[in-house]
Length: 249
Image (cartoon, rainbow, N blue to C red; front, side):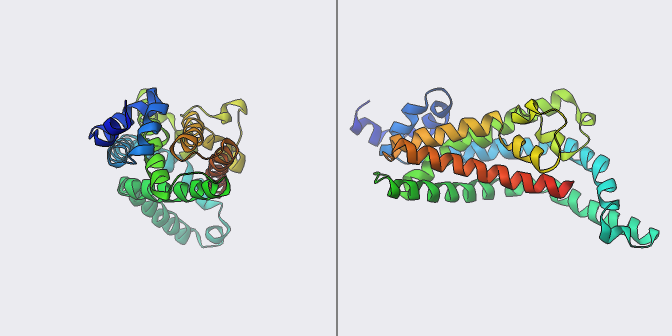
């Protein structure tokens, strides 16, 4: 495909959605010339929203199974009279359930915020290695890769949850753990370590590799810099999930 053909190809955004999965180098070559991301954002958003709605019953069931005991063990609640403890637990669970029922609203917001963060990190790597990329190109790369890291991951997670059944999950981590991750290598792992390893799932690792390789094509970033930036972002995600798991107990 020539440069002029790539420039005027109005289908490039839709082609990138498919090619980022089956022929990523072709998608990245198009992004270098035409940094479009609308179709990728739309697909990742729709898959994320659909997944949120599908797994919602499993997440609510897991909440009912695990959260009351966790809240009862909270020192701030445990010191209250029994009647007030029950009220505090009910209020907290009610608030959490409301958040879960409306979490689909935040899917597009999260995709945009993560895209901005990743584009900034890759722009810094680009500057450090004297690449040829721009913030806009790296943002388009990030949103395109989210078809895998968020969209495809969400789709597979929803399918697994449907197959296993709502009653199979006794904690929120158990829902997330449905995706194959490094946590499978450490049976019974809990707390922060569990969250960290769960973040290192197949799709996050795949997306990390795509970001690193994509940056070298889209922005001519040196491989060492692009891989360092991509891995650093993955570790940030893992630390964030580790903190969340630790808070859940």
